[in-house]
Length: 374
Ligand code: DAH
Image 1 (cartoon, rainbow, N blue to C red):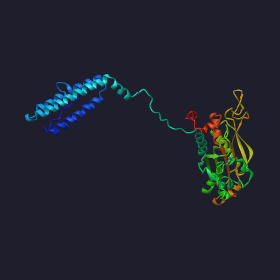
Image 2 (cartoon, rainbow, N blue to C red):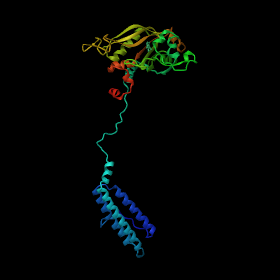
Image 3 (tube, protein in one colour):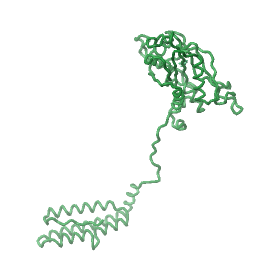
């Protein structure tokens, strides 16, 4: 861009010095930006061209226009400036020839072929995906969703679920207790909940019947980790309480849910079991949705159902009247209401669904494993 040298306001030495300083600053600034020979030619002409160059302008504007008495002084400055310009212009050329400018350029160069910074968005963990799928099957049946604390009291985890103190059924759930709780009454002692069932009690304390709800969440047990066990895992609890709920409702609801989850071809089967908080209690099996119930896959034994054609999927039963006794004050009179409950492991379902052979993979946080489920 053509540069117009400012006119001098007066010819005092202060004004002359200041204006000259500004020009030198501009000269230096432009010199640094020169990186190639064509750049340098433009730079040189801008300052030194006979016709419109900055030096010529200085000569015309300052020296020629100066009154007689100032000519000597102005002449001296103009000469100084000229010397300076010549020096900087030739030093700039040297810098380019020596390769220093090229190195500067190289350092500033942006490789536009490099990949940009990738910011992958997170995705739902496969266990959480499975959890959401199961929950949504029950939401479609009109169930609401409840949650409860992972650190729980002995009362909710055991006592109110009809596990009396020292009852052997407590031994089936290897419990992780919070330390230094001995001074508290037993029912207030803290532990990591071993199942999602305590939220049955918490919900019935809060809400009057009728209720239908599912309770997803994390649970802990003192199980050493191996391919099928983890001290932390996930469950979904279900609870339906109303004035006339029967075992037939339990079977019908769960059969429908399993077909919605695993496909309309799966069958369900119930076999007697025991849980302190249900009476009668059952384990529910679904026909193996991996091998179609035949026990064989491509003529090989099916590993998912251990060739039995059935997969054990949840525990269930009719809510024990003793459990209702603990929440009777909120409308759960065991003479008036009945209900069914169930609890299923989520991680197992995810393992079967995705064909994963080691539950540990879910919790090691290895991106290479997890990103397969995005
Ligand atoms: N809480 C049981 C467990 O973790 C599972 C269970 C069984 C839950 C029967 C229930 C039920 O609600 O009715 O082993």
